[in-house]
Structure formats: C-alpha cells, structure tokens
Image (cartoon, one colour):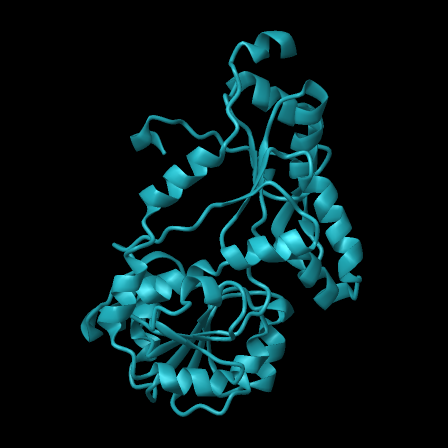
Length: 321
C-alpha cells in the first residue's frame, strides 16, 4: 500500500477490551468499542473507510459512518450464514437478512470471486465489486527435499504421496470428508481449531502437526503431493493460492472458491468425489501450478482494492468535528 503512495491504518479488536468468540476462542470480539473507535477514526482523519468484518467492531464503524454521513465500503470474506447453520442450525434466510442489513448502506461490497457475487445477488445484495487475493510467491515456492526436512523433520520417511490440508480444524471446513477418503500414502493436517482433538481420536493414522507459520508452513506445502481442500463454504480459499505457488496441485469440490481459483486452469481437479479428485491431481506438473499462482500478485490485489474505495473530501472532517 505504501509503495503506491497510500497509508493504511488498522483498527482491530486487540485495541479494545474483548472476549472470545463462541466456538472460535482465538477470534476476539470487541466490547462496546463505539467511543474509542470514534476517537481512533477522528485522530487519523482518513479519506476513505473500509469495514472488513461484520463483528461488533464492524457494526460500530457502520453506525459511526451512518451517523456522520460518511461513505464507506465493506467486504464479504466469510459465509457466516452457512457457518452459523453448521453450528447452531439457524436457518439461512434469517442469517442472510442480518448480513443484508449490515452491508446495505455500503457504497460498495467487495467480494473475492464471481461465484460469490452471484450467490449474494441471489440473496438480494447489490453494489458488488470484485476484490481478488494475492499470494507471497517468494515465501510459498517449490523447495528441495533438504530444505523441507530442515524445516519439517517430522515429515521424514512418511509414506508418499502426501495429501495436505491447511486451515482451521473446524466443522464448517468439512475436514472429515478428506480424512475419510480412501487414499494411499499419508494425510497431513496443518492447523488448529475446536475439532482437532475429536479428529485426532477418529483418525489416528493422520499426521496432525498443529498450527505452523512462515517458513515452516511453506515447507509443509512444498512437501505435499496434492493439496486437498474439502470446504464447501469458503468465499475464496487463500490456501489454494499458497499451495499452487508452492507447485502443489489442488483437489477440491466444484464449489465457490475452488471454481474461481482453479476453474479451468488445469492446476487442480474439482470433483464431487474428493478421493477421485486427489488421485487425478497427482499427475499435474508443479510448473503448471506455479505459473497459475503467479497471476495473483499482491500489487494487482492492492490496486483493485483502492479502485473500489469511496474516498471523501477531507473537508468533511470540519463538519464532523
């Protein structure tokens, strides 16, 4: 962002008193953030405001902007209605009604893919524009066997092929569909979450590594033969790009996210039978996967985001004050 002449200021829950989100304890929810949020916004006097999520902080920012008639944009990153239904059986129409109310005053709703845009339009959302994602192709890259084992020695000697999942270990990620698939070799799960202990008990032959970051995480991608993405509810799936940048083909269901990232690129296999997709993906060359990922640059992603914003005249702060 700074390379393009802009400064981004983030207001996040860790700047407020907060409590853990039910069933997502590592996600914090800001408690009564209104006044402190207002002071943070007015201290920085931004020329554009973007609201990233629909949590308490997002609702407070929405109220602030509406009260002062400041334009703002929002993003639809997560299919919360589907997640809530998976956990608490709340009907989708009820949750989507809340989501529509949150996003309706935004000048633009940013989404990552065409299929998510079409889904939201069917639920009655409007003023939607595309904001794709980028991947760090320096960190996530093909690596030698020696590099991999230096960073992930626990992978030494595991039977191949290696089928990898990276992400939250939670019910909405549908990981059990991957772990129950009949596949030769080794299944590896990188990540943490509320379903981890349960899946460890049910699938003792699976290698669960816990959460990994940075070079360690990148080494796990590089070690994989196929990246398996069992989720049916993600709006994009940045992990797909990280795998492809590492030269690893993708196996997934033909649903939003994989359809948009992989599509007809031949860098992966999409099939309603996850085991069939994973076995077929073994023959995809690493060079093809890497080349596809290189089209998703951070600069292109940033320029797209900037073009979607709704900047306002800085003189508006005189009226706000």
